Length: 174
Figure 1 (tube, rainbow, N blue to C red):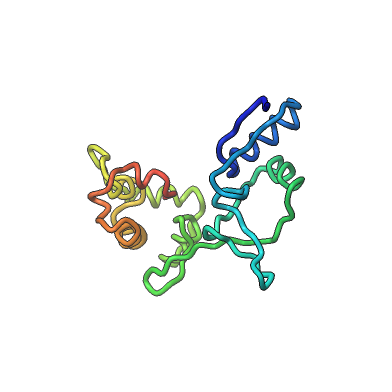
Figure 2 (tube, rainbow, N blue to C red):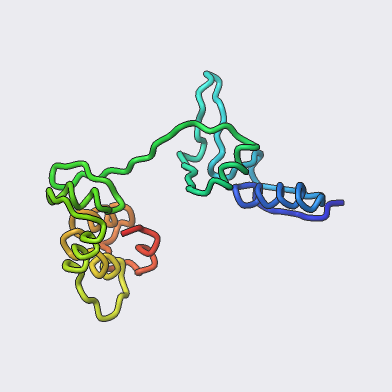
C-alpha cells in the first residue's frame, strides 16, 4: 500500500513524487503510460552510444539557482547556449524581439528606455483584441508583425493570424 499515487512521470510528477518521499517520508507510487520517467524530456543512449532525445529536443532553462541546485542532485549538466534567430531583411536576428533585434534590424543604438518608446510609436490601437494578429500589432506594430510573426504563425498553424484566437499568441513573447 502507498500513501500517494501520482500519475505522470514527467517533470512535474517526478518532482512531486520526490518531494513527498523525501520531505514527508511518505510512500509514493509513480506511474506513467511509458516505461520511463522524464516525460517528453526523456533521453537515452542508442546502440552507438549517442544521446538521443526520443521525443525531440526539450531544453530545460531557468534563472533560479535553487532549482538548478535541486536538480543537480539527480543529473549532470551540459553547457548549452540556446539562440533563436529569424531571417529578416537578409539578416539573422534574435527572437523574441528585444533591444538587440531592433538595434540590428534598423541600425540603431537604442537604450532599453528608448526601446519602449520605439514600440509605443509603432503600436496600433486595437479597439477589441480578439485575434493573434491583434495581440502582436497592438504590442509592436504592423511592420514588426509582418517581418517576424505573420509568416511564422501561418506556417506553424496553417492559417493567417487574423483567424487565430488571441490565446494562441499569448504564449509568444513579443
